[in-house]
Length: 323
Image (cartoon, rainbow, N blue to C red; front, side):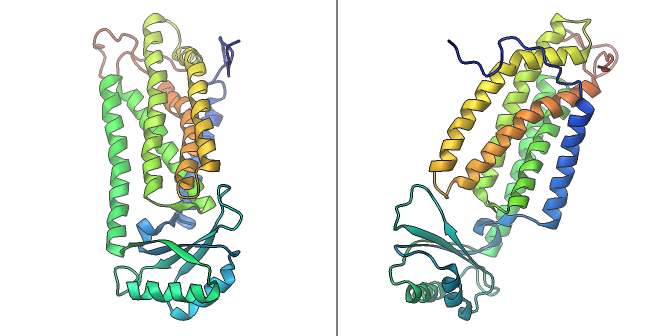
């Protein structure tokens, strides 16, 4: 027997309640913006500047004792978190000590790092220091600008590519879906206060590519069906196209999620934020390909004849989009 996540033939009406699904997406994006402005992101050391010291000890970690040892040093904002991972041994206790960049220094000085390490060793003689990472405020500011530029350019490239491959209506729908995915990812990171660093930017760009791939597959089938069914209303063509590609979409998303869930559980804390962003991005990316990108195409309308340029303007011959 062949495994099927969805029946071989489906006739689901994806656009029956499109005002509600599209409205929910709009509210979710708006909520993400509000949460971002009010709460903000938990920027990692890459963006904030400062020093992260990763420690390991055989004794259980006492965060309060660690903090009491470091506070007298007058380093300003110090964050101490214990790292949990199912792959750690029973006597393996890992913590991360994050120290903000000092006002008159690019990063915490080696002398101050040595002082912090000595203070922690006084609390727990079994402690060892696995790594020390420092990023200056100037460098972190440049990284923020570069990361924003990378996401903006990726969306602009998508807009231009789809405009050439299909029509401008498809380009607008796809870019709207990508913005939807990125904003919802930023929103969930703001709500959960998961560390936001350069790895998450890489995840956002990967999400853009994944969501685009799913959207283009649907749009390709839409174009084929527009040629085959010239008299069929657009809403029915879109429903048919999504049903045609539904099995492929479900199988691709399911198998990708299986691999990511394994990585999330067993991959360790270093890549956990990246993997979480990917899992979330695949879920919202699959959703947006249907309920954001396709809905925008439905409302804008597209031309029927792909063999020659339509006579009534760049958008082509328009037709009714009423369900």
